Structures are given as C-alpha cells and as structure tokens.
Length: 106
Length: 123
Image (cartoon, rainbow over all chains, first blue to last red):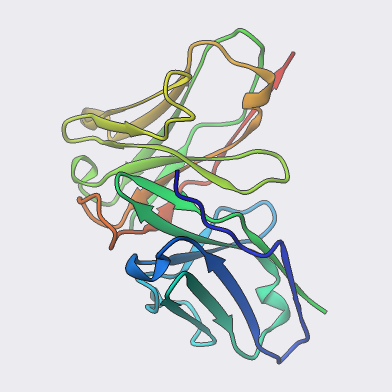
C-alpha cells in the first residue's frame, strides 16, 4: 500500500520559516494536500492541489511538490501555527494521510 | 454553509455493536463522497473508507474491510460508520469528512470535517 512519510517533529523560532516534508513514491506525479490539527480540534485544510490555499488561510502557508517530496512551508511562523500537520494524497482508489509532523514554535 | 454534525461520544464494552452518524447540511448531500477517518489516542489520521450517498457505493481501506461498515441514507442526509463487534483497539476519535467534489480523483481533498465522535471501548 502507498505510504507517506513525514518527520515526527519540527521546531521553529517565532518569525522564522518552518518546512515540513512529506515523502512518497513518485509523489510529485500526484496532488498533495496539507491539514493542520490543533489539540482537541478537527483537521483544517491549509493547502490543496500542491500549492493552493483555501479561503481564510494566511499567505504565510505555501506548498510545493516535486519528485518524491511535497513540502509545506510556513513563513514568518507565529505561535498560533503550533500544531500537528498531515499531508494527504490519492493512490488509485484510496486516500492516504502522512504520518504527521508536530510543529513546535519555541 | 456546509456543515457535518456527528453523533455524540460513546462508551461501550468489547463485543458490543455500535453505529455512529454524520449529518450533512448546506449542500446536496447525495452528490458528494463522505469519508471516515480514524485517530487513535496520540496517533495520526487514518483514512478508513468512503461512501457516495447517491448510490451507496462504498470503498474500504483493506485494513478496515470486514471490521466496519460504512453506509449512507441520502433521504436524511446522514452517513454512518458501524461495528458489529467492538474491540478495545477500536478506541479512537472518528471524523467524517466531505470530499471537495463528486468525483474520486487525485485532484480532490477534504475541506469540510465533522467535529469528531469519541468512541471508548473497555475490555
């Protein structure tokens, strides 16, 4: 079955840039989406179709996808961005989530 | 406004059966796929399966096939996730999520999510 692998944790200082990777076989040939989940809350879509932001998502969130890796970048990270982040892709008939990355804003 | 409202928390014992629900509103319920996603305590998101309410076509992730049943009743705009025999390992938060369009495709994503239903199963 298709697997998406993320680093377990990423630490970033306020105002700096956080990059979260998502690795999967030929992921660049698929579309990647990204979700933010804060404790006790439902996931929120922050990036879809590799690079697009839903309405209401700040411009500091951006995405890219090439080769075997999709990347979520948070520019000018704020304390409110501290959360778990999950990538997601579609493989044939199934939707797959990544293993998840905990982002800590120090 | 699109909304997915899930049924309340459940506490069950191993061996019991359970059916939880997800009611959609603010859109044409029959024409959008609804997925179920499991999140075990302290763990990540797992896609369990998906149903198209228009014709009840259902697809399961292999690891969940045979243990749960996903269904939908378009007449009352509600999707369901049910267990015939619960196990302690079914203890988790379960989310329903609506696919962005009526097609299963690479381009789709989950914009709308329910608030989650916590299922606790004691052994």
